[in-house]
Image (tube, rainbow, N blue to C red):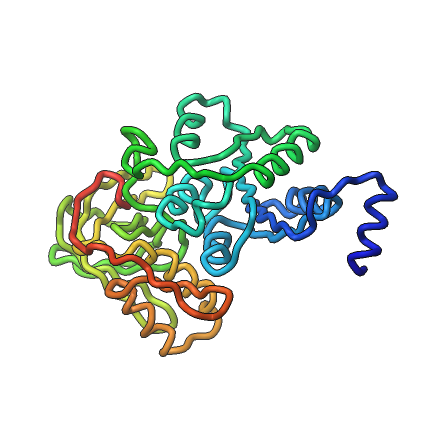
Length: 307
């Protein structure tokens, strides 16, 4: 369908389209909900891009542009709160207005945190389509002046130092006291990781962490920061902090790597991920030239929410 025919059909249906060159990104893991958004927005002349989790949305946004982001708070891998925290660190993303949709906005503490993290509009999941479209048009027609607080202040006393990505891949831990043990990686950040392991490790014990894929390992060092025991699985959940904090983009690179190379493995790609802790992420722009990421200190800092 060409633009002239599309415009004619919209006029016949009585739709008034302010522009047809705006792109909205929908981040939602429910395919039926994404389809409803797409039908609603495309009838109004908008282009729609979909992502099934926050990590895929961020990866797309680091190289391309959207005019409004519609974010479900409970998406997997990178949830809505982590998405907003990551957005604060990237100027080309925090300039994009974000509409957060959730069924939990009656929680006053959560509501306050989302506003402090820079959410432009908050919607309950049972919103009226006309209200939603009105908000989208408002965000598009009014100049967007992002208010970006310091990340430490954005979440108040419970602010998290690092953005965490959810994983479910094998991990190996080696310690001087218990030798080598295998478990599952549950989340990863620039400062550390969370893992389920079958054996008890000592708090603050130095450890070596190996993430394995098709016989190759990414090796990091760290120490046990905290642990809890799961009675249901008879295993332990550990928070492990890296000895040396990695670059902010490290967990996103790791996610992208495991997603793209879980079936087919290339040594050259693995060599690139091994360098992630020593060089910044340079996302590709539309013209193919890399952006220069700001330099980040690798100094180690203990944080109760770094992993």
